[in-house]
Amino acid sequence: MVDVIAGKIVIKADFNNMNPVQDNIHPIFHRLLQRSDKETMLKQRSKVIWLTGLSGSGKSTIAEAVEKILHEKGYLTMLLDGDNIGQGINNNLTFQRCRPY
Image (cartoon, rainbow, N blue to C red; front, side, top):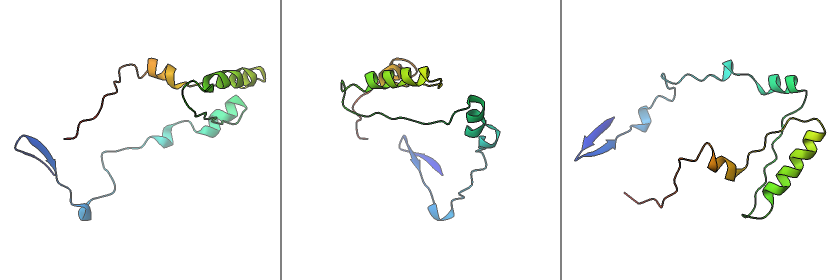
């Protein structure tokens, strides 16, 4: 139940009587191509190589070298670099200190 009290939105929930099944959410996973479908088409198994480390530690340099080697061996690759994603699809996000309510 949602109420507006003194100009603030108040959400009240009775966790004992909540229905765990949402009637308005319809998962589409059964309609999506499966991982195995894509692996069969590409004739390769999918893998993720996740590089973590401090800024400037060489993660992108290593990733570029690995991608080049895999490409030369005939593998399809996708390189996602955090800096590039930040400049691209997430370019409208801002990072600000959160203020407590």
